[in-house]
Length: 455
Image (cartoon, rainbow, N blue to C red; front, side):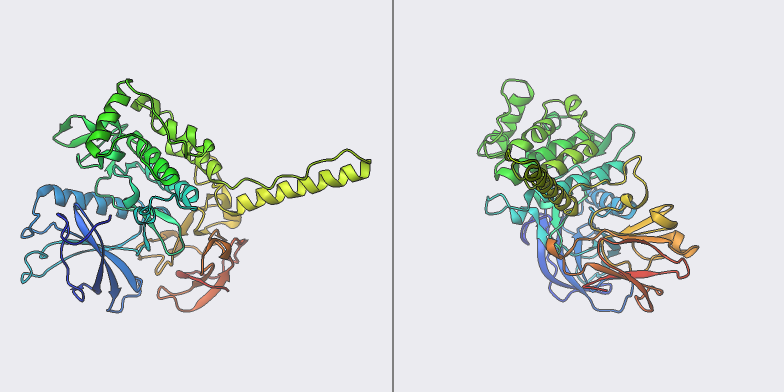
C-alpha cells in the first residue's frame, strides 16, 4: 500500500488520535481501500508490542466510502490474517472498531493492528534501479506465496506495494483485501486487481455475483511480472500507459506477439519469468509456488567459489590442488546454505528441525525436532492466549528447539532467543543462540520468548 492522504480510500486520522490502547502517529501510506498509520501503544498490554501499524478501513455506516464491498474486503483480510499465520505473511495482532460519533468520517471504521514494517518493495524500486537484494527478496516473496497457497488462499493482488520490508530487511506479504479462499480449484475475488499484475485471462473475464473467478495461477503471473520489475526496473509488456500495456497483453494472449523479456534480465532468471508469464492458465498451472520456490532459490543463490585450477605436475602437487579446489567449493556451498536461500519449508517428506522456516525460532514437542511444532518470527508474548498461540505448550513442555534466525552478517541486530516462564516475558528460563538446534530437558514449560542481541 502506498500513496498519500487524500487518496479516494484514505481516512484522515489526526496525529494523537486514540484507538483502543494505540495512539496514532504519521501516515505510512494510503490505497484505494484504506490508509495505514504508525502507532505507539500507550496503555499497558503485555500481549502487544510497543509499536504497530494501524490500517483504517472505512467500513462505518457514516463514512464517506460506505459501500458494502468495503466491508467485504475488510472481512477477507481479517479472516485470512486470523486463520493463516506463517513467517512470510504480515502479522495481525488484533482488530478494533472505531466508536466515535463525534467524528462521523471515522465512526465505525475497522482498524487492523498489524506488525510494523520499515517500508515496501514499491519504495525500494522508486528510483528504477534494480536493488542488489532483489533476488533474495524475490525468494522470500515466492516463499510467502507457497505458504499462502498451501493454506488454501490466493493473494489476488501481488505487486511491489503489497510486499512489505521489515526492520531486518526481509520481506513479508501484506494487503490481503483481495485475497480469496479456494473452493476446490477456484476462488472468487472482487474485480479490483492492479491491471499490470493481472494475467490476460482475467483482464476481460466475466464478473459474476460473487466476483471474479481466480486461481493460484493469477499469483504465478503476478510473481513473474514482479520478478521482471525487481530485476530489470521495467514491466515485461510494452506500453507507456496501463491501457497500452493491456492491449499488449491481449495481443500476447492471442498469440499475435511474442514475449520479449528485457535484455537486462539475468540469464538464470529468464526461464523462471517466462514460465510465470505463460499465455494460458493451463500452461502456468504446471508451475506451482512450491515448484517455483526451488527454482527461485537456486537462481537467487550466490555463485559458489570456483575451485582452484589444476595444473599438470607432480602427483603430490596435483593432489594438493584438488584438495584446495574441493575445499573452496565446499566453502562456497556452505556460504549459500548459511544464507538461508536453500529452504526446505514444510513440504511433504520434510521432518525434524528442517521444518523450521528460515528467520524463525521453532519449539518442538519431542526431541530432535520431532512431534508438534510452533514457530515465530518475532517475539511470542503469550504462547497460550496470545496473537500467535501455541496451545500444546499448555499441556507439555518443549523437548527441542531450533533458532533458524538471521545472523549479524545478514543485517540482523537481535539474533539469539531468550525464553521465559511467564506470558509477560518475565522469569527467564533459558537462551538459544542463532543457528543452534538442541534438545531441551523438558523440565520447564516456557510461555513466551524474545529476540535479543546475544544470550
